[in-house]
Structures are given as structure tokens and as C-alpha cells.
Image (cartoon, rainbow, N blue to C red; front, top):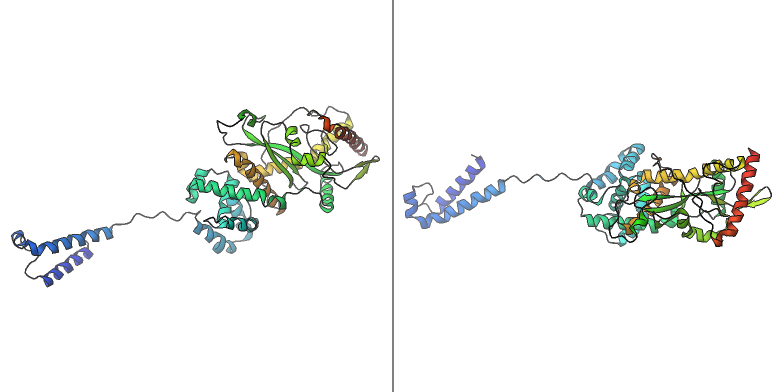
Length: 421
């Protein structure tokens, strides 16, 4: 028997004998019954003490060990251990957890912290940002995150919506800008000349369907969400520079929209077609002034500010085929930018958020992509887009003058290129 238990029982008996020496709990049952009034309080007190002892000695259930994703564990990593680690090891660890290095992570936190603080969130700002970045980087579901961080799914959803909205609105103007300033415009056009022989290219445009994890059965016009590859999606349109940094992002249509229609609905198109944006850096090619322009594939309309290939299968003249080849080299920048976007932020491969919050999540990932490119983060393995083909879009009445100018400009550039080759 437990020695501490025997000691406790002995002390109780001695206490009782001291208070009432005429009775003893060790007497026979006859003696006990003859003086039950005297022994009853002792018996009650003894049993209560024994039960209390047993309860107090009952081994508590082993508490779950602190989660490696708890606030305490995150704080220990981000404050106590982070500066004791070598920078390459530290940054590799943070990339594996949150998709970007520790310095870039702190930049994001510092820029978002004032807005998160205003929301009176019960969690630390850096912890909330880390949680959302882990979801974006690994494509984790609400259920997985709720289990990992020991939080309710509705709270995970609320925090994700808040952080992605802040990225898509507060940080967008700082990190996604049309290159209108002359210094940046010159840097961009010169940068493109290192990857394509075409002069004065200032951007490459492309679209990509962003797959939706699921589509609500009662979604209006659900069939319009299914892209040419057969899955429900939203259509993302981006323009990238030579460094694979996006300078324009648009998410305005379901995946079933044509690229040209989506482009014509974009703010960028309306600014360019109305001459609200005029890139003031012209070069002379065969006596013709050539202003900066963007390059796209055959799914976009040919315009004075957007040049496209002569043909899909290189069936033009030698000069035209040479132009098409040079144009596709320039387009490679945006193709790789999209591949990096989906490779670095895996939620873009299977978007497991509600349709209403999907556009801001997509734009948030584009902002984070630019942050990584500006910081020269290591580039992950590119996400490979499916091959696509199609016919050139029809020319709208309000585009005809721009189309004819673009057609003439394209031929001049093709002839000049072929002559130089």
C-alpha cells in the first residue's frame, strides 16, 4: 500500500483518539455500533479524506505537447532562434514554411501590421501573416490549417480574407505599376532587347486559367467558368517585364471567357485605346516612329500598342516567320512569370477559397510574386501551362484604325529584322 496513504490514515486515527479517546475506529463492530454517534463523524471524515486523497493522486491525462505551429513555437523561432541560424539556412527554412525568406517576410509584416492592428485581431500580426502565407505557399485547406494551428475554420477563413485583401489593395499600388516613368520605361525596353531582337518592347501579355477547387452547384452561369482545358476557373491576365515582374494584373472574368474579350474589359485596354497612357519613348525604324508596345500571342487583338504573331504555325514569309520567332522570345518572360507564380504559390494550382474571395487571393499572390522577384528570391520549378492554340480574334469597329496601324508597324519591324539578320 502507498506509504503516504498509510501515514495519512495513521495521523487521522491519532487525531481522533486525541479528540475522543473513548472510541476507536479499530474497535470491533459491536463496540462501534454501541457508540455509533461518536464514531460516525470520524468515519465520514476518514472516507472523505481518503476519496480526496485518491482524487488528488489520480494521474492527470498527459497534456498534448505544444504544437510546432503554436504562437509560442512561432515566437521562439522568430525571436529566439532566428538570429542564431546562418542566413542561408534560416531563409531556406522560412521559404519551406512560408514561401519566402525571412527578410522578405518581415517586409510583408511591417507593411501590413498597421492595418491588421486596426482590425483588433486577437492573434499577433506576424503570426497571422505567417499562417496565411503557409496556406498560399502550400495550397493548404481550411481543415488542415484549423487542425495545424488549433483554430476554428471560420477564423482561418476570416484571417485569410483579411490578409489577402490587404495585399491586393494596400500593397498592389506599390508593387504593381505600369512603367510610365521614363527611367523605368527605358530600363524595361533595354531589358527586353537582351531577350528579343525586337526594338522598344515594354511588356509581354498573357492569360492563364486559375483552377477553382470546387464550384458551387447553384453558381450563376456555371458553364462559363469552365475553361478550354475542361476545369472550372477564373481567368487571370498579366503583363510582365523582362525581369518577370508583373506591371499589370486583371481578374475580371470566369475561365470560359475568350482572352481577347477579357483584355477588352480590362482597365489597361481602356487606358491604351483611349490614349490615356502614352509611352513617350519612340525609336525610328525604316523612317517610322515606333513607340513602346507590348507583345502577345494570337489570342489577343493586333493593335498599335499590342503586336501579335503573323501566324500560329509559322506559315508566313521568311521575314514574318523571323518576326514571329522574335516575338515569342519576348513572350517567354510572361510565360515564365506565370510559371513562377503558380510554382511558388501552390494555391494557384487549385484555388480552395470561395469564388467571391478568389480574385483578391489571386491578386495577392501576384503581389507576393513581385516582392519575391524584386528581392531576387530563388526561383522555384516552373509550373507548366498546357499548350493552347486558337484563331485571331475579330477586329471591333472602334479598333480598326489601331489595327491598321499595328498591321503596318508589324510588317515594318518584320522587314527590318529580316534585313538585319
